[in-house]
Amino acid sequence: MSKTAIWMTAAALVFALSSARAELPALDFDQGIDVSDVLKTARANAAEQKRTAKAMPVRAFYTRYDRDCAHFSIGPNDNPQTSEVWLRSTEWVEECYPGPNPPPYPNPPYPPYPRPYRDVAAHSGHGPNGQNCYERPGRTYQERASVSIRDRQPLLPWEYDSFDVCLEGPWLSLYQRETAYQYLVVQGGNYDGKYVLSPVKKIRMKPDPAGIVTQSFAADMALTLKDRWASYYANERTVLVLKLRKDVPNWFDATLLEKELTVPAAETYAVDFNAFASEFSQKLEAGKKYYVDYSFKRLGVVSKDTLMKVGETDRAVYQPAPAAVGR
Image (cartoon, rainbow, N blue to C red; front, side, top):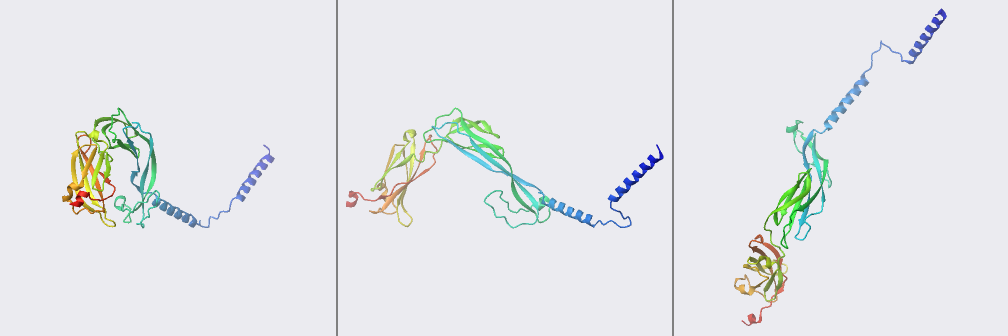
């Protein structure tokens, strides 16, 4: 290599170094470095982290689930397989934050519903001010529900089977409300809402509340009741609970007689209240309105002996029989 080439290479290197130095700021090593801005930034970051840590939920205090239920009723002439119904259940998680005791929350008309203040300091170790707690929605569960009766057995005309299927969280439950048979669950439950039932044995139900109705209540205080299902209660007995009452305008109605009669089951029941006149709390008054408040129960093996309150007859204006007027 010639001397001229070496000189040119060295010159180029010096020029490059001088150019790079010109682009860098000058450093004065005799002057101290100002770190106040760095410290301010560090303090701000620490404060922000502290606030964030306080805002984090301490823990889930407890978890609950909405309960959604569907009611199924199957009568004697209904399809033993019900249609499917969707059930929905939402998980609600209560989370608690450290903080002072806040004023009571007004409950809004929509979820989530803030829960009342609860002091859980003893459990969480966050000081005497306790915790601020609220509920938030978690998972939502949906399931289909239906009821099917296998080997359906006959029901009496007024009987029925009623069930509730409920979803609470991911779990399904069946409740036999009023049934004419005791049923065994052969399929369904837990995570399966398609219940299949099989009858085990016949059980008594309440009698039909509309099984005995008023046929007439006359002005001479003669009552006639009609029994719709008398043929199903052959050789059994019926208890009639009767109250003869006087209609008193703008005041409490007076009770003249309370009577319980036990009679054989029949298509009609006739009661002449004049036969019990000696037991009246007051005499009948011509031109006044009277009515009968009546209930009944069945005694036998067909139905339970539950007292069924029916209601009241129409008002009848009392007119004494001519023979009674002459006496």
